[in-house]
Length: 489
Image (cartoon, rainbow, N blue to C red; front, side, top):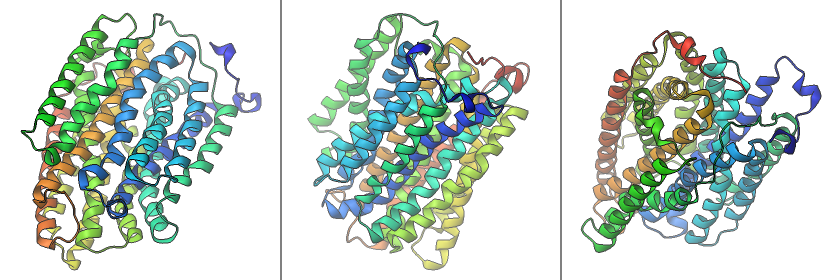
């Protein structure tokens, strides 16, 4: 497939540091996607007012985006195995900026959600290829550093997104939160064309798994819809019960199809490896906790503490900033110590920070700095966790299944994000005790109590992720030998 893709610029490809140019290009896509993801969380309290929608409906702006990414990521991962990664990655930039531009022109909530899905198709093209490109570009002893840099770029995007979103909301209007993706995407297309290597031929063959591709989206959407809409529909309503039954049926059929397919979208046999299974379970929980916090805190800051959008964005930014600062440290610790120590310590720090938020989130201005400090500590814990956990998951896959392992990892991560937002939204609405799920016009005490319920849930999930990290098997000959199972084809 290499001959069908444009080669990198020879002057760049000859450089000794060429692999880091490739990593840097991937980091642009990672940063852009996370700016959008974190900025959207800051937009939700404003969009609740703009569209006059209930909390569960507004949350679909984030949830639909993540679910579509989870559905399309394995599809594009398989297509990349068949047809190459470079052109699909560049196409991801193009679709993302088109979707972003259209989101800014949406006049109602359903239209905005539809364009968010289109935007997420582009994001799925980027996500499905990013980890594999980094792994192929870096040497066996540098995977931790390369993935750490990618995690740092994601954290920079997560950190900048809330502040940028808050500034835009207070000055230009919510539409510009989507339009600013366009110039960054154009830069990514140009650099990707000049820098990314051609895809080497893949040993994998087989027909495309159309059956699995048709089942994955309705399966994931139905299950998450039950979690997100349970409060609005009623937990004993025929709609919810029917949706749950449909989701479970689609999941069973999807698993059956993937086990029988000669070239499945998701190679579920990877989950028979204990280290791979435990790593992805912790991956799911950690991102559920992270995005549960990202969903809740903007409502806390705006509704309880009466922060402006900019002030709320700046406070929220402290979390991903510390995450980004610690992500390379986490990658370096993995290269030296393996995954168990940094990941379990990272989750322990997250639990301590959530306990701080629970204790000091009372609506009083004098405790607001302590809540902000707790967000910073939470970012430290996530920074120590994410990169080592990602590296450990990828190290369990044989070299020829790097793309498949990356697809599974990304799907689990995205489902974790969706579940965290949907779960936090539902529990928050239940705690508020209002049928419409609105956060407007409620006394501070009610908002504080509902917020603390969500924090307790997230703390429990973090504790489970920490326990799983302690149970993960240690690499038999040290992390570097384990990492050497990667090869650059």
